[in-house]
Length: 294
Image (cartoon, rainbow, N blue to C red; front, side, top):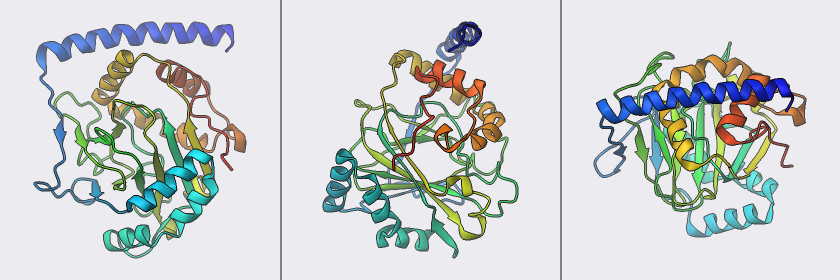
């Protein structure tokens, strides 16, 4: 990093620290947040009403072990090929979404770390001019986790909903290996803290075939996240609380996020703001500027 960028980073870190202290003081004094947990026996969330669904045991133990082995051996191309042709995923899509939805030519394998800041995904129709249908993110879990994903239900319905959020607690979705979560890309969500940070899961995108051209930046997309976040967990938890109190701020960066989504490996220009953000929140300015996996 250049001297100027280091000075800017130090200044922003100082401002963020003051802001975090102020927020945590408010949080401790005036708020008693209690996360809700999804229990499939009592709740039945829908994509239309809640913005997400959880499907239990979509993949068998044999399926999961095969995917895990390929992850650990680095055979990512085989994983993608198997999932794109999976009848189990095709059946989930055809029984859940209207006709015309397909899995995009996209895979993002998370072997280590997590996104610990509240955000909406790039492929949401809030952010892509010309997109005519909602787009979805699919998460396939290959290992048991304490909590799989945290969401703000209903936040997918309006772009500026929960722009500031001082009252609504996150809903933690509990799942097991073999389960699949499908959620509207407009839904505000964040990774959940677990005992381990190397639980393997796979992200894919589900979009309407009429919108594939608009979302072409997520075609032929093959990335693997397998690096440690060196920011101390206590600070990351404070950052998570802060970002989930002001989740609407992430809307302001979506245009830049989309432009740089393919990474410098594919000729995209990653801006200085994104580099500073990655450095402050993830310990490296290029943390999410991932090379092509294959």
